[in-house]
Length: 268
Image 1 (spheres, rainbow, N blue to C red):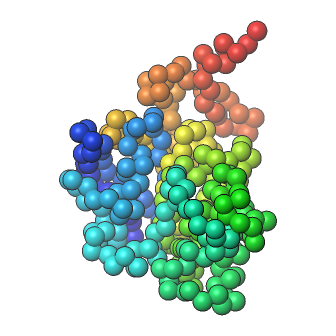
Image 2: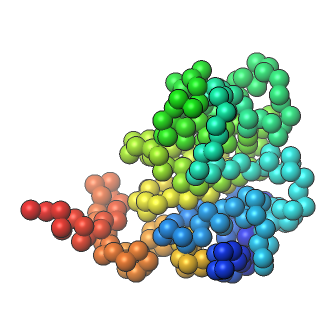
Image 3: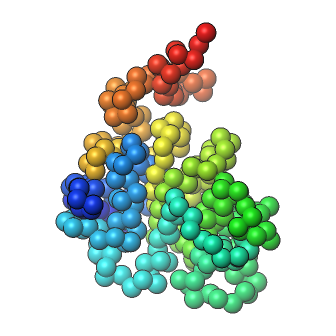
């Protein structure tokens, strides 16, 4: 069971958005996608979600092309959290999370369905937001509710999480430092339970701490993919981002990436 893009290319707005990119998302793996702005990260996620079709190559779920999946069945297998929040209806937080249950045709508010919504809110760190109006929330609070909505969507009665995939476009973008790590910890726990998780991030240090696999995109091309400690090599990242990046030891025995020049300029 895998969700895989093989040799996908896509042209849009007169330029090549993706160029012969292959990426495989395995069950039980937290896979982080990194790269500069405009590298094609969100475009690739859209192809893996089935929201767009490639001009070349193919995207397969369990050896079956995404267009061959009935929409409801596909929605039960993979959930997507996009970066932009365009919901403008006066829903409550619980109603937004309950939208994730529509592919299961669970429109009734049974005790079992309410329990799924509550569990998803708790798992996303959004339990205290239950009962509030969604449009009154901050950007970070909305992000946690949208994560809960995606978690509710992949919830199955049999709890067969090994057959589920979660695709997230910058889930930490609106979150403070503490919640960034809390969300990545929860995604790590989901992967440990069998979910295939793909998350677009901007901070390579989050990937170093939490990811199993990392892929780097630049100008629509995949330039490296593998274990974080191998892919996130300072020399490679310095060339990719145009910044002097160095590795620094952490107290726990790991290491972190620092922008050397920025730190030096900030000193008296």
